[in-house]
Each structure stands twice: as C-alpha cells, then as structure tokens.
Image (tube, rainbow, N blue to C red; front, side, top):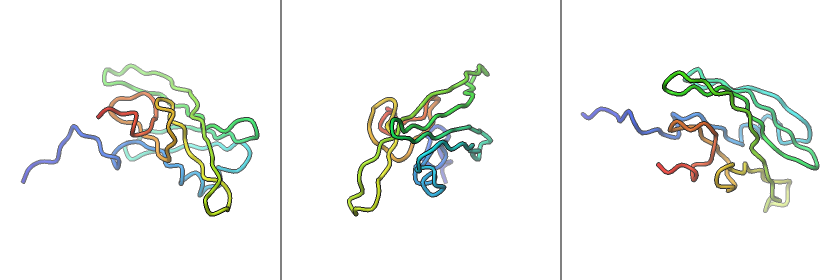
Amino acid sequence: MPKPSQSVATSESSMRFELKDFIKKGFHKVGIRYGSTIWNNNSSIAYSIVINEDEKYFRLEYTQTDCYGNKTDMDYKIYLTSIKSNLGKGNVYYFLCSVTNRKCRVLYLVYGSQYFKSRYAYQN
C-alpha cells in the first residue's frame, strides 16, 4: 500500500474561512463584529467584520511564519459583496478575492502563501 502524499495540500488540511460559518453566527448584519479562529495545526487568527452602508469588509490580523522562522505581521482587508437572493429573501454574501477579484465563498491559506485567497488564485 503506497504512503499518502506529503506535498499536496488538500482543502480539508488547509487553513480556510467559509462564509457560511460567519453567516450562521449573524456576522452578516450591520455593525462591527470581532472574533478569532484556531485551526487543528494550532494556528490562530483574529478578525473583525465591518458591515455598514458604505463598506463591507473582513479584516484579518495574524502573524505569518515562514520555513526559516521569519515572522511577518499581516493586517489587511478582504471586501465583501452581496447580491439579491434568487428566492427574494435577503442577500447572498461573497468574499472578493484580493488577488483575482472574483466572488467566492471560501478563502484558503496554503502553499506558503501570506494571504488568504480564493482557490482560483493558486496556480497549483
């Protein structure tokens, strides 16, 4: 029986944000919400979500450590957009990928990237 590959990241093993998790917690409502997430690999991240008439964004703050032990403090915004639901009940929210500017519902941090981005932004 062959060993499982150690070099390929899967969507289950990567650090990711799914927008549906934040909507379940009520973070899509107008206002400012704060929180943090801890993944299975003991990585953690602090975030805030700001939604008002002028802006909708997801602000991420974390420290990125590369394979040489160099640390970089990350602090950036990922904008949110919404469209009317085809059911006529409210809006459907999406992240706007900071690299491709495409709408997506899941953001990933894999392959040594410093930024969370959509799967279309990765070349692997």
